[in-house]
Each structure stands twice: as structure tokens, then as C-alpha cells.
Amino acid sequence: MQKFTTLKTLFKRYRRPGDIVFAWFALAVAVFLLSQITQQVQFKQGGKFGSQPQLWPMVSLGLMTVFAAFHVLGSAVSERIAGRWQEVGKWLASIEYAVWFVIYAALVPKIGYLPATLAFAALLALRAGYRSKVVLGAIALVGLATVVLFKTLLQVKLPAGQIYEYLPDGLRLFMIAYF
Image 1: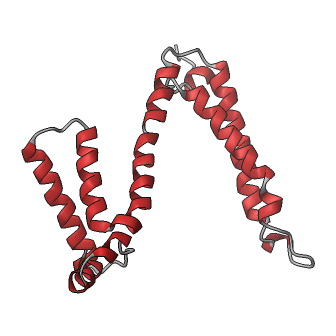
Image 2: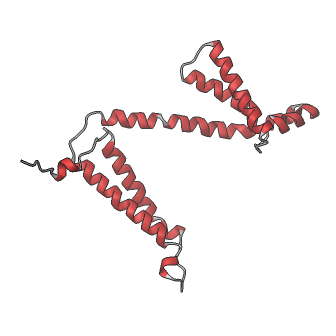
Image 3: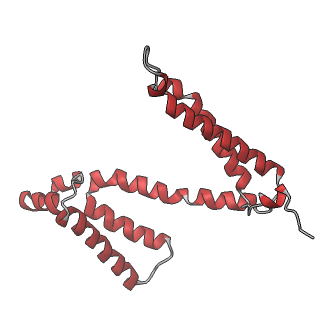
């Protein structure tokens, strides 16, 4: 006798504890972006419908909204999974590293690429729990190697630190050019 597969078993998937929160967030973002489309891109008078600048962004945002709504619906009708807010807490904790990067990017023009890179490499190592002098020394060498690679060897144009203005002329030009 052949066993039939129901739609419920066919479409069963592993769900994460924060699935419903992510689904609602995705729907809110999609609806917000769709509501802003007319202020961002306009229809041109007399142009072909398929070549309108607003058409394809509107189609993609419309589909994003529809699929986000389906995600909310699918998450809402599924069984509740314990640990939802712990999962969301982990997501929010990861934002800390984005904040570290924003602070780093804001400080590079003020204190220079070399001091900012060395300081933030050490601070992030300390934040990650490393306390050994050997590890912190290795982190400092990696930071120095990164600066030398990008600023000196690859000649990536990065803003010179305002703090370099207080150095003597020859050293200031050297630091601006290579570090």
C-alpha cells in the first residue's frame, strides 16, 4: 500500500525560535519601502510602460511585501517555538560590532588610520576576552601589517588623521603618505 504525503509534511521545514519576529520585521521593512517608492522614483510622461524607472523597483518591492506577508502567515500558523526572545537577544547583541565599526570609521579621520586600527584591534581583542600579552602583541602586529598593506603597499587613499598636524613637518608628511 502506497503512503501519501500531505501538504503539511511536504512543506514542513525547520523553524528557528525568532522566526515570527524576523517575519514581522521583514514585512514592516517591505511595507515601509513600498510606501516610499513614489518619493524616490517617478514615472516619466510619454515613456513605455516597461521602461519606466519606477516599474521594476515597484514590482520587486511589491513581491517582497507579498512574500513577507506569506512568511508572517506561515510563522503565525506554525507551532510556537520556545526561546524566541533569547534568539532575538542574540541578533541584537551582534549590532554591537556594527557600532564598533561606526566609531572606528568616525575616528580614522581624526586620529589617523594607524592609531585607530591599532587601538580598535586591541580593544576588540580585549572585548573578545583575550588578555594574554602574546595575543595582544600578535593583534598589534596584524593591525600594523593591515595598515602597511592597505596604505603603503596598495596605496589605498584613506583620510589622514587630524592629529598628524601636530607632528614635525618631515614626520607629518611621512605619516600622511604611509600610515
